[in-house]
Amino acid sequence: MRADLTTPADRRAALDTAARLRHLPEADRDIIRLAGDPLFPRLLEQITSTGGCAHPVHLTGHTTTRNTTTGEILHHYDTRTEPGERLLVRCRNRRASICPPCSRLHAGDTFHLVRAGLTGGKTVPQDVRDHLRLFATLTAPSFGPVHRATTDRERCRPRRNAGTCPHAAPLSCTAHHTEDDPLVGQPLCSGCYDYTGHVLWHAHAGQLWDRFTRATRRHLATLAGIPQSHFPRHARLSFAKVAEYQRRAAIHVHAVIRLDGPDGPHTPPPPWGTVDALTTAVRTASVTVTVTTPYTPALGEHALRWGAQLDTRPLHAALDDPDGLADDAVAAYVAKYVTKSAADTTAGADHRLRTPDDIDAIPASPHVRTLMHTSWRLGSLPELAHLHLRAWTHTLGYRGHILTKSRAYSTTYAALRAERAVHQGAVDVQAVDGADAVTEAHWRYSGSGHSVGSALIAAGIAEDRAESLQLYREARDDDARFAAQSWEVKP
Image 1 (spheres, rainbow, N blue to C red):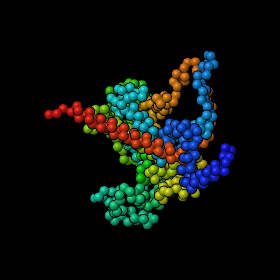
Image 2: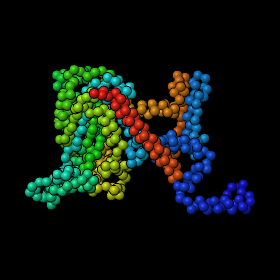
Image 3: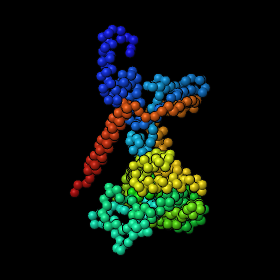
Image 4: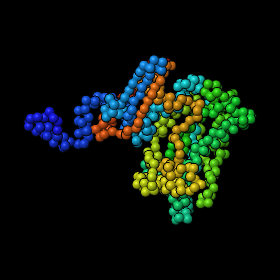
C-alpha cells in the first residue's frame, strides 16, 4: 500500500480497486499494470518496432560509438533507461507456427533473395534475366506404396488380384481419398515400408544435392566438348533451393538453377549453354548420382538416389513466352514454403526431442512417429554418429536449412536485414561507418517472450500490420490492372 494513502477513505478506495482488479482476467490486469507504467509509451514503441513479434528476445547491455581521434562519444545507448531495463528484438523465427510476424518478414526476404537472382537487383545486374534458368523439382524415391489423394474418377491404388503382403495387409486400395483424408501419405503396410531407408535418405539429402550439382557441371562440360576441369573457365552454375515435406513425410526439392559466365551473374553464359543442354544435364545427373551410407553390421549399406519423378521448366524473361514461368511467381512459390515447418505438414515437430517418450507425446500420425523412433534408434549406432540423427529426430532425420543457395546466386539474408535496418533508421550510418569511429557493444541475453498483457498488444500490432500489407498489395494490383487497361489499344 502506498504511503500517501493517509486517510481511511483513501485506504478503503484503494482496497476496493484492488478487489475489483482481482475479479478481472489475468490479461486485463496485466494490461492495466502496463498502461499505468510511466514507460508504457516506450514499451509500445519497442513492441511496434519488432512488428508484433510473438516471442521477442530480451537483451540487456549498452553500446557506445566514439571518435578514435578525439575520444568524443558520438552515440551511446543503455538499456537501463528502458522498460524493465531491457531491449526487445525480433526472434527471427521463420516458422509461421511459432511467430507469424517474423515468418512473414522472412518470407519477404526470401522472395527478394530469390527474385534478385532471376531479375537482378540487390547487387545482381539486371542482365541476369537473360541468363539461362530452370525451375526443377527433385523428389525422394519410393520407400513403399502409400495412400494417395484421388480425383472423382480415380481410385487410390487399384490392383486386380493383388492379394496381401507377408504381413497380411492388402496390396491394393480401391478407395477414393480427398486431400484432407488422414490416410493420404500413410503406407499401405507399415511392416513393408522401408523406414530405415527413408530416414537415411533424409540424413544424406544435402550430400546427394551436392553430388547432383557437381554431376550437372560435369555433364554440361561433356555436352559442350570441354574438359570437365575447365568448366569454371567457361561457366558457373548457381542455384537457390527449398525443401518441402510431402504428405508421405518425405521431402522434395524445388530449385532455381541458373547458368552464368565464369564470373557469375556479371558475365553472360557461354553460347553452348542452351535450355536443352541444361535440361539434359540436370536429368542425367538426377539419375546417375548415388550416395552410399557407411557399412554397419545391423544395416549393411544403403545406396541412396533421387526419385524417378523429375520436373524441369525453363524460366524466361519474355512475357509472351507461353512455356516460361513468371519470375515473381517462382519467387513467391519458394517464399511460401520457406515459412513452413515439419509440424505444418504433420511431418514432424518444431522443436528438438530429448527422449523417446517425447515422440509419443507429439500429435502426429503413426507413420511419422515410426519415422521418429527409427531416427532415434539409428542415432545410437556408432557408425552413424556423425549424422546426429537423435538431434534431428524432430525433422525425421533431415538436416540443415530449409532454403540454401550458392554463393553467387544473389544477395544474402544478412545483407537484406542490414539494408532494412539502415532504411528504418535503426542504424546511424554516419556514426557507424565513419572512418574515425569505433563502436563498443556489450549485450547479454536476459529472457524471451511476452507477458500475457503485452502478448495481446503484440498480437494486435501484428494483425494491423498484416491487414495494412494486404490492403497495400490489393491497391498495388488495382493500380497495375488500371495501368494495363489504360495502355490497351482499342480496336
